[in-house]
Length: 239
Image (cartoon, rainbow, N blue to C red; front, side, top):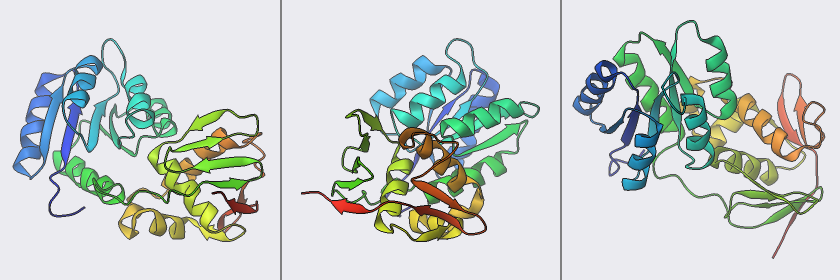
């Protein structure tokens, strides 16, 4: 994260006694904040000005946090930290599967949440280099990093999140090579990314569900047990 960027954090929680003190705490610690009490207000905030990360309560009236999480990750390509009940293991798993970057269980220490926000922003800085713009074909599929889509063999475009777009680009940069989880984390965003050690596994799983014919028996992104992941395809660069 560059010194010129002051990250803006969107806090979405229907509990005013959590939302407002948390906003004040983050502002005292150098972050700008926008507050929203529900999904509709959060969407209006996103339309008003750029946001770099969302802190999102899962249990909210109306559109719930998991539905909003899906939109924030896939439509707005926004990093998300979930606020969950301490016993809500299913919500945490579902949120991570949807692409959330991390979670904090309620009741939480705001110092822990602040540390996790900084860790995610180090992995996904507000100004990060755009992926390469060259289109590449592999195993009948075409990756267009500028549009963040993969065109399947049947001609259908599948949208990628920013993290999936970068991950696929890295695998295409190293066809046939085994890339360890730590190596992928380093290539994606630096060594600070290790705050969440299953980030790569979750990203690979989501990417497989989008591009593999059978994600349970992947043939493109192959797991090398004890090693990492390998792209098992030849790669051609398109004009």
